[in-house]
Length: 94
Image (cartoon, rainbow, N blue to C red; front, side, top):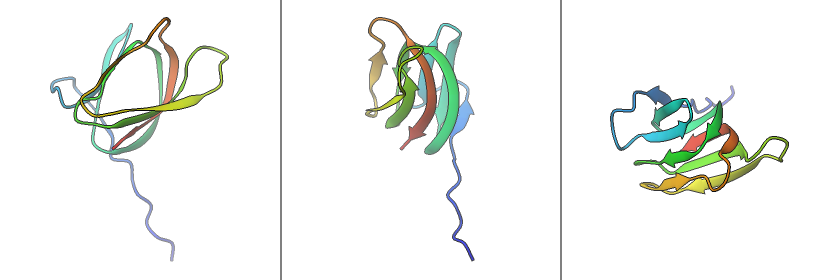
């Protein structure tokens, strides 16, 4: 018998609390809650508020550039310098 896999518990939520992970782009804000990891396709990100979440993200900084990753600590505000991030492809909340 195989061990049970851990399920992703990340949920997309309304942006109603300061404790949520909030990702901003020209289209507005996307908010997430709970721990886990999830593939996403979020383009043009210029600001992130981590709230009560440590965030590791995989992203493509600009079109044609190789993918990279980075971590932002809890209660941190991040702003893109220069151009927005082309695409965030995966988020992990912990």
